[in-house]
Image 1 (cartoon, rainbow, N blue to C red):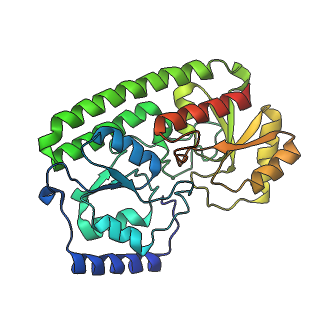
Image 2: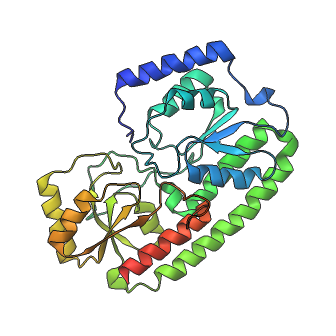
Length: 313
């Protein structure tokens, strides 16, 4: 299910714009890129950082979605489409996170130019008691909130870089291996942090269904979400809000977590009725600026873990 709910007309307009750019500039190909000078762009800041760790000093990876912008709501501008056309590789998360951009890029440049970082990872199925259990057809694209799933991201990106620039294969392999070591160390650190939460408090209510993979990995339970969807742009009924208030009360939920790029309005209403706190500090979909608390993927995961642990203790 696409999280960016662009009308079909908009998708057609973007395709037309992109084809005009291709006709005027000529589509680029990773096979024709000079060695060590690949033009690579990732859709999000966290993907850019992960890919940059694989690239090392060989080349710089750019990003499309600005820091602080919710990718579920982002729409590509014509300038973004030009950037895609002029790149040798486009790294996407997959699972519907990028919506129409992925379709447009594939139509214009071919599947070989698009690197789906999550390729090979199975979508999460809601567990008993969670929203959507037994009926949801949504694909949850939040694999990156499990660092072990990000190991798959790294291997997919590594293989794409090597195929596009085989002269630097050894460097890419070494960079990827070193980063995987850091991901596994991060995983062990998160496990230790979550272990400090009393077992009865290991219950998550998010603004939308974003932390299923994180919960599965670290032994937390997803009790519900303000927006009971993997997309932050869905509508919410009065009954759904009332049901969540009841869930928070009966399961003794400690807090509702909202990301910095999301509107906390509905969460505030539910929290006021349920008498719990709202924590609006998470940075799951975007890194911070260089001077902020989470300028890298590894730092973002540590930062968010600390916020969650503090909120649930």
